Length: 146
Image 1 (cartoon, rainbow, N blue to C red):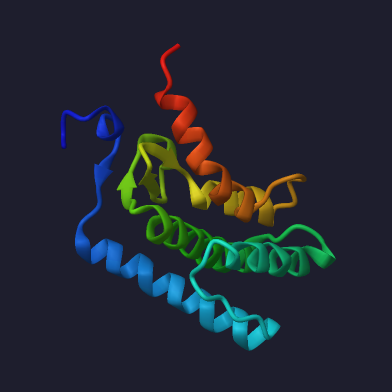
Image 2 (cartoon, one colour):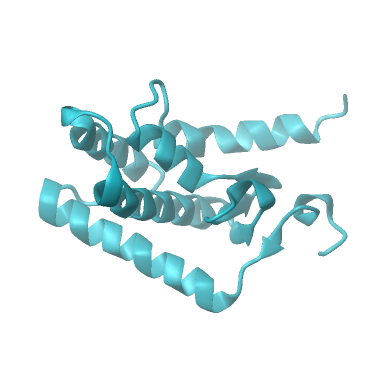
């Protein structure tokens, strides 16, 4: 596995760290249900519901400070965990995800925390659901001969 191209820049995280990320994702499910009345069910479709929650969070402008820190962590962990479950991936460390974690799924490295940051700070045209749904096509294209 260490010589495989998909793990060339990635280092698998310890199981204890993966469990901590799953716990943060569970906290996201609870807080979204409590504050927005939205049930997140760990499906790819639930990321569209979380996109809508993010849109509600941005109603008064981009998030900053402790509010951004909280939601960045929750949204990134939930998104990563959904993709990992859907496509058989894992949490990894990657140099481009300094201060956060990345995911490895279908031979593609993804950055759910980076995406969460972009969405929550108001960057237009970003979507958690699109990120997850396009991963199989990106993987297929990356494996085609040039």
